[in-house]
Amino acid sequence: MVVPAALLVQAQAEGSPAVSASSGEDDDVIEVGGATRGLPRVAFAPHDAASEGVARRLAGLVARTGIYDTLALAPGERGGEWLVQVVVVTTPRGVSTAALTRAPDGALRRRQIDSVAPLEPLDLARLADAVVADLSGERSHLSGRLVHVEASRPGERRVRVMLGSGELLQDVSTPGQIARGADASPGGVLHFAGSRPGEPLALYREDQPRPVPLQVPGFVQAISFAADGKAAVVIGDQGATSIWLGIPGGSMQRLSGPPGVQASPSFGPGGLLAFVQGPADGPLRVWLQDRPVSPAGAWAAAPSFCGRDPGAPPRLAYMLRHGSSWTIMVHDALTGATRGAGPGQHPICSPDGRTLLVHRPGAPGGLWTVGVSGLGARELRPGAMVGGRWLPGPPLPPEG
Image (cartoon, rainbow, N blue to C red; front, side, top):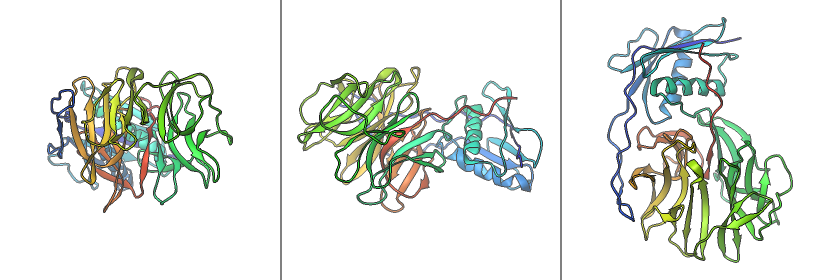
């Protein structure tokens, strides 16, 4: 049964709040603290009782971006002081799902999508992405693939794929394989470092049972791809790790740097490379190209670019240790300003650069989504992870 749903934004939302930041010198002054500004508010109003479930699920998804505060109304309930009201209509038959949204320029834009009842998670995520696009002028990536290394059980590391909604899609690494350091090539093929019992760590592709041969000796620990297909591969040998740049299976060149540890490479807009570096006994610092961006003397790890498009502002999320806990930091490469985005580890930044997936240990622990401003934190699912990549989502429902 086809379930069309119509969404009507009755008033335009305010823009999402800007990320405030402290100014920085060479070792950037860092502001750590929770954000207090409220988010723009969006109410989802079902046309009737049959539409209530879709309205509630859409409200929950849009809230996960961390850029809107949402409310799911009951049929006939008024939104009151809420700045935007999205009317959701579902019918058991008809043509397509229709989404009529007021854009920032004041125009009404209509979206269409087909789905078999109930709405599939991917279709619902695409619809939520479209609502965000028509409210803010830029889509979110709840429908994008989150390639992450799950570490929920001691001694296990699995590469898995899920939607930004938390819906699991795929197990990439094979059972019994210890996996880490995953990314997708520009063609979308997943690569990761992995080892089977009794075998050394090597580079694997999701579609090949045998390791990808490399021309560099040592043990593979992670890989990251740039938009042009160049890769950064972390190789461990004799108690140290280094980053090698090039085409896997072809010619590769070692990234210059002092002896010790180089790890966690991440490519950003225009091929910018972030990574961690430091002596073998620490502390490690986050570097962007040839300069450190995290403070001297403090442990930092797991850089993740917020947006990889050439026109995207070069912002970088990473984790910084304070005592026994970790804080997520967001660094603006243009201004040098850095600010905290709340507690967490191993941030994965969305392609639109506005949402983070982080691991929060303790109670309640698990995987959380939060806006880069530190607002809108919501638990996504239980478990733990040690890094990954957030890949762009499929096309939005077309306008009609």
